[in-house]
Image (cartoon, rainbow, N blue to C red; front, side, top):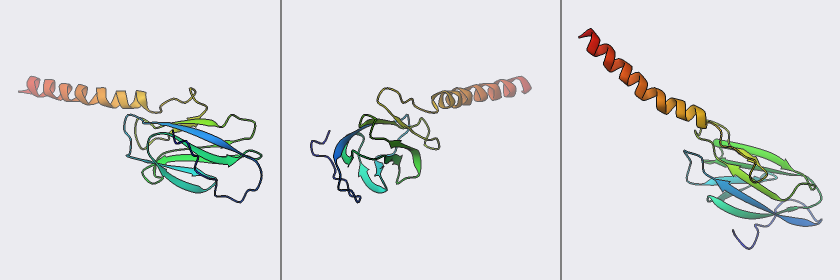
Length: 135
């Protein structure tokens, strides 16, 4: 985790706090992330990062992979909520990621990915059987 938080760049003169964002890859993941804080975008690696945010108003936080096109997830963090979030990338990049309180986010698409990976060998086996029986 970076010790010095990334400064807030929006127009705000009130109190601030530090958002700790923990990111975890999905089964398939792009090399890096784009984190959005109230519309300002930061390119980050996987792991943890710290961002300075306003303490007296809601803040919009978004995370995406591949320049904003894959695994998109967003939330609004209110002043009453703890300033700690976790992002989990999806099992397939065409699905949305998840963002929320640490320990509450799940990886989307695991069952779908498993079904696809299990279905391909079954279809191939069925084709081999059909060819053997027909020949």
